[in-house]
Each structure stands twice: as C-alpha cells, then as structure tokens.
Amino acid sequence: MASIDRHTASSTHYAPHRIVIVGGGVGGLGLATRLGESLGKSGQARIVLVDRSPTHFWKPLLHEAASGQIDPATHQLQYAVQARRHGFEFEQGSLQSLDRAQRRITIDATRDADGREVLPARDIAFDTLVLAMGSVTNYFGVQGAAEHALPLESVTHAESFRRKLLDACTRANHARRVSGAQHVQPVSINIIGAGATGVELAAALRDSIRLMHRYSLFALDPERDFCIRLIEGTDRVLPALSQRISARAQRILGGLGVDVLTNTRVTEVREAAVCTHDGEQLASDIAIWTAGIAGPPVLRTLDGIAVNRNAQVLVNRTLQTTTDANVFALGDCAACPSDADGFLAPRAQVAHQQAMFLARALKCRVGGEALPEFTYRDAGTLVGFGDVGTIGSLSGLRERPVFVDGWFATVVYRLIYRRHVMTLTGFARMTLDTASHWLRRRVHPVIRLH
Ligand SMILES: Cc1cc2nc3c(=O)[nH]c(=O)nc-3n(C[C@H](O)[C@H](O)[C@H](O)COP(=O)(O)OP(=O)(O)OC[C@H]3O[C@@H](n4cnc5c(N)ncnc54)[C@H](O)[C@@H]3O)c2cc1C
Image 1 (spheres, helix red, strand yellow):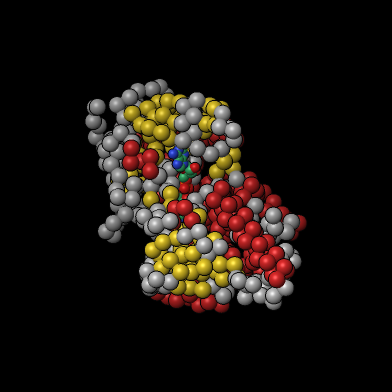
Image 2 (spheres, helix red, strand yellow):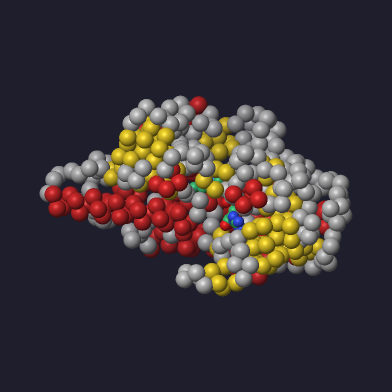
C-alpha cells in the first residue's frame, strides 16, 4: 500500500472524501457531529458513524442508572436523529474486520430479539477511518470474575445491576417476613475497584437504598441490613488522585457506612462469595467489577493494526495509528502518548478533547494541509458523592491543581454533563433538556422502584 507522510494530507479515493467513525461514544459522536456540521453539510466530505447500538448514552452517568437514580431512557440520544440534524450518516452494526489495502471495514449483521437477521453484514469504504470504540472491562484473568462479577460498560449492564439489587432486596425482605426475625443476613454488594467509578457507585447505592426505604419498598434497615463493600488492591481509594482527595473520600465513604477494604486483592469471584488473597471469603449477593479497562477484543484482529497489551490501538500525536496513516484512533480505545511517561488515562475529558482536536485536524486532512499534533490539557478530576457533595481538584486556575469541594464543586460536576449535551445538541436544546430534567425530578419519584 502506498505510504503517505504522516503529517500531510490524505490520499483521497472517493469524491467527496469519506470519513468513517466507528463508535458513537463521548469522542466518536462529538466528532461525527462537528464534522457533519462543517464538512458534511457543505458537501466537502461524507461522514459515516457506525455504532453497534441505536442510541448514545454518556457513560459517566452509568452509576446513577445502576443505582436507579436516573431513567437512562430520558438521557439517551438516537443516532439516526442526530445524524439527520447534523449532516452525517448512521449505520448500525458492530465492527468485524478491516481491509487496509482496500480501505474498507465490514460490520456485522444486525439481528432482532429472536435472532433473525434485520440487516446483513455490510462493507463500508473509507478514505479516513477513526476508531472510537471505547473500552471493555478488564478482569485481569481473575478466576470466576467474568462469570460472577457484573461489568459496568453500558445501559444494559446498569439495568441488570439495578434488577439484581431490587431482587436481592425483595428476597431479603421476604426472608425476614417469613422468619419473623428482627434482622436478616445483610444484602452484600461487593464493588471491586475503588477508582472514581467504584467510589461514585458505592455512594450512589447508599443514597438509593435510603430512598427505597423512604418509599417503603421494603422493611429492611438501610444501614444494618445492607453491606456495601468497596474492595481495592492498592493502599487507598482513588489511587490515581492526590493523597488529600483520597483521604477525604475515605472519610466520606466511612460516614456513608461503606465498608472500605484496601490492600485487598481479589483472587476469585464465586456465585455467592468474593475470595481475597488472604483467604477470606466475603459473602456476595451482587459483585460488580470496576477495577480496570482494556480495548475491545476486535482491535487485536484488525489487519495488523498495532495494539498494546491492553488491546488499545497505538497512536502518535496526530492520533494516526502507528501502523496506517489513514486510520486514526481516539478515546479509551487509543494508547496516546502523554507528556509524562506512558499513555493518557481513559477518561471522558481525554476523549472529548481528542474529538474536538480531530474535528479540526481532519478538516486540514481533507483540505490537503499538514496535520497538527494533539496536546492534552488536564482540567482536573471531580468525584461525586450524591447528596453528600463533590470533591476533587481543578487544574489551570493556578500553577498547581486546586482542591475543590462544596456547592462550587457540585455545580462544576453537573456542568460537565451539560457541556457534553451542548456539544451534541447546541445551547438551546441543552437548555430545554436541562429544564425538562429539572421538572421531571419534581414530578416523578427520584428513584426507580421497579
Ligand atoms: C461508570 C463509569 C463512570 C465514569 N465516570 C467518568 C468520569 O466521571 N469522568 C471521566 O472523565 N470519565 C469517566 N468515565 C470514563 C469515560 O466514560 C470514558 O473514558 C469515555 O466514555 C470514553 O469515551 P470513548 O468515546 O472513547 O468511548 P465510549 O464513550 O465508551 O463509546 C464507545 C462507543 O463505541 C461503541 N462500540 C464499541 N465497540 C464497537 C464495535 N465493535 N462496533 C461498533 N461500535 C462499537 C459503543 O457502543 C459506544 O457507543 C466513566 C466510565 C464509566 C464506565
């Protein structure tokens, strides 16, 4: 295949230039929307977004969906509608293979609930391909984990966790009624991995259980009859953040009655127990794995595209893959060099910035100009504890990151999602959406009870 200078323009086979983006998540959908508005509507390029699902959901809200605090259906955005409004095309299907010489991808057939084919497998040709397929849960080969610990990657997983929680409550409530005992064996929920996702989920669960109790869903004691355990292999929660944030988070979790086990490595997950390195078997009604991510397995099979050991695609600073200058990658599925040693962390902030960068860079590529290089600016990290508040640090205000908490931190935390909605729908629709959610929370129960 003809090689082209990494920093210069594309070789265009199709007129207009075809940009295919696989994955409509935080990064991919933002990119498709921006490129559709600029190159798609003006006819300078044809933009095609491919996703295995028909709707988009912002992953950082998954812990709120899993704990029943939001109805995911009211936060989903339909790709077909987004495509129509913003000048791109949408194809539903899962990426199956890549043919770099022919510049073509193949996506799987889509099937209905009975397994009947709805759409056949299809080939989609490209001049520029962007892989934006996010990540999957990394169980690090722990025995039984994939079978017995739920992942939290999608709305389907969040819903299945929520159902399990309601079922476990109903079962314990019934056992208590039948036995007539004052208290029953506590409902044990084990969250494995105390990064931001695990910590936020633990706090949200405590809130949800109290709310369920308030609505008289069950007669269980929300404190004594539930054991929420957060299990972490390193010596502190939020190990990627500062000692100060970590210590504060640990105190808040303690106040919420979350049982935090640090320096505890999970060695096996069974149907009703989580086993640790020191031989303990922790009772488990529900186990959920929030301890690490890897690139989707299909990335290991894409026509020689180089990946790291976590199956993330190796890219250089133009976000072109190190294997093929016509193939780019962004977000969680990309291993992008950071200014410090190593790669950028898998975060919504990174995916968003890379998408905005590529929206500009791909315009240069279509116009035959040199490609710029991506620079990441860390804006900080915030961790939400529901009603208790938000803590974290913001960067860029002073020379060093500034610790924040209280109402200010909570407002900024909420604004992050609003900014995402604005990127996708514009200011007016985002404002209406915010108002409709505000009204919804005043009219409907703030917890989903079935
Ligand atoms: C519970 C949870 C909480 C989080 N909280 C935060 C937070 O507070 N702050 C933060 O910065 N980050 C957070 N993250 C991480 C953040 O969500 C990710 O870093 C971000 O979503 C990555 O964006 P992305 O565009 O790379 O992928 P994603 O947003 O994951 O999107 C990937 C898309 O690709 C599609 N896809 C996957 N495989 C295929 C395939 N084979 N074919 C076609 N389509 C495919 C998927 O359907 C999906 O739409 C959280 C993650 C989780 C799970």
